[in-house]
Structure formats: structure tokens, C-alpha cells
Amino acid sequence: MVLAALLVAAAALQNGAGATFDPLVRDGITRGAYPGAVLVIGRHDTILYAGAYGRLTWKPSGALVSAESTLYDLASVTKVVGTTTALMLLVERGRLNLDAPVKQYVPEFAGAGTAGITVRQLLNHTSGLRGTLPLYRDTKTRDEALRLVFDASPIVTPGSRVIYSDLNAILLGEIVARLSGEPLETFVTREVLQPFGLRQTLYRPPKSLQRRIAPTNLWHGVPIAGVVNDPNAARLGGVAGHAGLFGTALDLGRFARIMLAGGVTPEGRRVLKKATVQSFTAVSVHARRGQSARALGWQALPTDEEESSAGHLFGPRSYGHTGWTGTSIWIDPDRDLFVVLLTNRAFAPRARRPFTVLKEVRGRVADAAARMIDGR
Image (cartoon, rainbow, N blue to C red; front, side, top):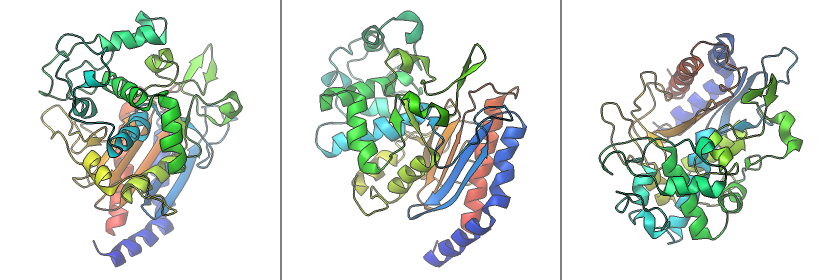
């Protein structure tokens, strides 16, 4: 696709974005999947569209959603923005070997069958570990929870298939902490969030921000906002490799722009090497029946969903991630295009199948963005 065609497509997207995207996102509100949402679409060098929809809660008097200031519990999008990016930096600095066994960095990870599990297998979800464990139920402290993870054993042969697992990401977060010699939150904040300019992305937001945070739960009828929705992340202190970050859609858009620019910020500062971005976002495990393709940390295409969160038109080198609370980010490097859609789908949905509705919205928005860029 030539530059002139991209510029024409970008102008068309800016001029017609509201008419194109607003009905798609509002349809999710009308169908009861989420009370509010923010959509940000762009390229490496610009934001093409940013739209805010609905309210933080279902109440007609609830606060309106803002593209600039509403914070969302990013849930599993934390895996790529925080944890994976921290690991990219550690690889660049020669601190981390992706093909080393996990036990080299976390000696306590010593359950039966774990000796040969590598860091790469944690990243592409081929470790064989189960999807999760009820840490919040079976433990009372962070240390106890980590011990359960360290004692986990694979349920299939490592390397044999993809099992998407929060345990993988929890271990990766612990690797970051061990190699940096400081808490995961400290390293990610200083080495990722601040250099990348993600000024409204953080762990454990203070109460002063609560009014700006989209709630994800109810407690005795009162909306709960600012407390990580994932119960295992809560048991781990609110900061974990798999969940814990809160952030705005515009911050995620900035992150996507940096990835599309090969590790360069909009101000021209390099924060990652282009080769590192390419190696982590390339397909690491190809899709098979019943399992998505995986990059390192990222989901790749094709996904294993009947209704893909990336739609049907994003290119084969696209990568992205979703979060249980209703968050998503997808990046198509061939089109120089990203789509960020943040919702609080987890908050008191009115739809019978809210996640199905949200996946439909995600896919339709992604396809519409691809068509506009293609000039169709």
C-alpha cells in the first residue's frame, strides 16, 4: 500500500469516523454488554479517531465516559503492556535468555515435569501448565499464592500445544522481579510506563482517581472501581504478571503507536529496538484446530474464536490481546493500523451473553477500520 493511498484513507477515516464507528460501539451498549466504552484508532504517526460512549455505570445520572481521562482495569492486557514489554527490555539488556529453563531464574519452580519448561514456552503459552488456579480461595497471603504457582505441574507435555494460562504470566512477572532485583510494579513503572509516556497507566490507583475509573464489580449494590477485578491478582497484592494495570484508551493508543513505529515514541525517542519488537510479535506457534496462533506474550492470527476479536480483515502479521473485563488492543503492522476498544463489560451486564456481544462489536469495529484504511 503506497503512502498516498494511506493518506487518502486516513483523511476519509477522520471525516467519516463517527458515522462509521459510533453505531457499532453504541450497539454494544444498547444490547446491554457494557455501560460505556472508549474507541481509539490510529497509525504509528497519528490518532485517527477517538470516541467515548455511554457512562461508567448504567445509571442515567452516572458519569460520562471520557477518552482522555476514564481509566479501565486492563485485566489481561497487562500481560502485553506491562509484563511482556519488561521482558523485551531484559532481553535487550542481555539479562534474559528466552530459551533458558524457568528454574534458572526462579529456582522454586520445581514441580514435577517442569525442569525443561523455558521462558519462551511461558510467553507463547506452550508450557503445559493449566489455565489458572484458585489462589484467592486456597491461600491467604501473596507468598502462599506464589508457592502454589511454583509447585504447579504441567497437565500436558510442555511444547506440545497451546494452553492459555495466567500461571505463565504470573511466573513471567516473577522473573522480571528476580532479574531486576525489585518489585514488578517498580520496574514496569520506571522502565516501561514512564519512558513510553504512559502517564495515565498504573497499578493500584489511589482513591483520588476512583471517580475516573470504570467499575468492574458490585458490592452490596455499590459499584467497585479501582480494585483489580481479577481475584488472583488481588491475592498477589494487586500487582501480577497477568493483571493489575489500569489505564486510558489514549495511553494504550500511544503504546500501539510505539509498537507500530518499531519501538520509537511519537517524540522520536527509541525505547525498544525494532528487531525486538519484530521478534516478540512474530508468530511463535501457529494455529491449530482449537488453539490460537501465539506470538511472544501476544495473541496472533488466526484466533481460535468463532467471532474473532480482530475481525476477519486484519493481516496475517497482526497481533493483539484482550482482557476479561472487556478490554482489547489489536495491531496490524501491514496496514500501519491499531484499534483499541476499552469497556467495562464485567460490570453488571444486562445482556444474557455480554462477552459474545462484545466480541461481535470488536470484530465489526476492526473490520470497519481495515476497510476505511484500505479505501473501500
